[in-house]
Image (cartoon, rainbow, N blue to C red; front, top):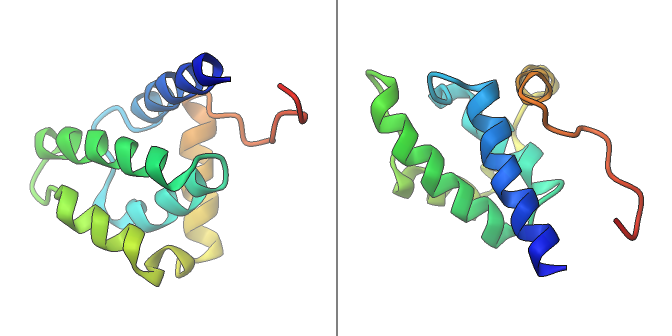
Length: 107
């Protein structure tokens, strides 16, 4: 299962980069991390968050730091995404290839 999970993590980062080719806007992080938590463990979300923060530095005027993301993960902020935020982020992820439907158990 470790190799399958590692492959999924690699693909998840690829899907995120495809869905957000210029980096994730600061306003999408709360919903994005909440959506990621549906499929990934907290440790996996943290690893991806560090990668996203590194990419954010290249993305523009208001980069998000690893500390900013860590605070979002640790707080209840991830529960505060509006349905509209979740729909917007889910559409971006789907455009990048993210599987919005859970795979059948045992895969």
